[in-house]
Length: 585
Image 1: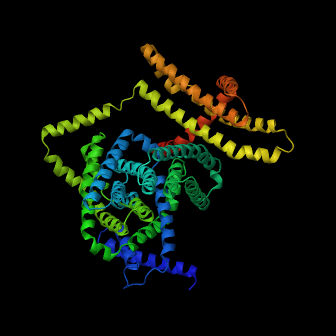
Image 2: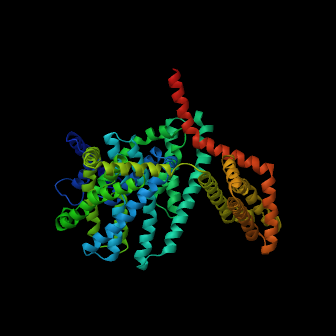
Image 3: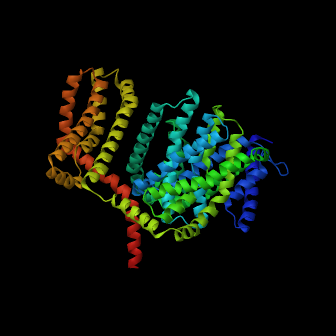
């Protein structure tokens, strides 16, 4: 049989077995994910009573596509706006859970007499919950619209972002046998840079494209465009050194902010279910009964830590972040499992030769068990809360209520918080976009100009063209860097009148932003011409002053910012219009 027909026969075997097993699982009122994993075990290489998949490498490739679609669908359901809306609570809760589980995982590995590196990797695996399993469980149980589900998904997104940084750090530690702080810092800066760049560029361009071409796009065209954008972002994410899962999620979150987001979500549901099934079946294929028998004690210990200790740690983290006890328990119980990132971290450790090979199937076994327990833990959270709350003393209840009130009061808006949230965010965003524009200019535009025009135009003129085009392009961003927005002017005025110290801080902050704008102009000038530092500074200062008073730069900046916020809020406005029309009818 040809290789192409082998692939077809493998997919036929996977899908038919998955279909039959999930029917049985559904009759037994068990989660569908468990059915997929059981089906994978039955058609895998470790179970010989039924036909076996011929080419496992092809199945693994299909499963990677499954992860892409699962994370793409997650992005479509959960936007970065929701992440920011949750505020600092989710970051505090996620940070506590990740740090605590890293420590507990390391201590567990030490107790099991694993090497230090294996213990570190175990901590990384235990810190990550399964986004796909939890989404599937919430979907099956009809809980996706509840507040604790939103909070859980925010924590999962933070975990996924941290997991990407963690994999780079663990890779470096495995190779050098020590932690390299600069490598970790570089990875975090690089990640934040590209996340901001992708989000700002995507929101500025993609919703505008959909708005202008809406009458020409039917469901078929929209599906093709959405999947094409998803795969394009996946390819670009891989190109700059990040995972496919991150690229898929980012594109999903960008498309979520468009008026076509819900339509795209419905269109890809069938594809997501198909490839998601293949992914979970491929996980089941990795279950080796011999490993389970030989290392049942290790599996039991890690499983208990995952479903008991991790539930407690996660609940505590959410409670400390200022959420209610009910939301804390429901969120903590939802996070009590490990999943796909644990597989990736385990595979990384084995491939780098710092982990024994038996650890991978052990982690898969723990994931299978916790996949099975996840829906039951989510269901048990509310009854457990009722039982636990009744047994608390009145004094403890009052302390919990007072703590929650104090944490919420800390979130009240004040003038400095307004300035920090808005002005600092704008400074970071405009700096990232300006740096990206300068990089693209010298990496691609300048070589293009030299290649096409250097034979007919003097070199100085070529350089002048490149510098001029670059400065014109970044001028609205530099203008945005230096000015104060209308939303912060009143805050600045009140703080200015309050004290001389406030005036000093405000002036210092204005000068810092101006120096950042100067830096970008000087960077363009010094990389293009052979100016001395002093001459470059004088010319740059003149250019910055011209941009600051330029009506053209103001109009371009205002138009770009208006377009961005129009795109960002288009979905919410469209939803409000629909609700108003329904009420009128």
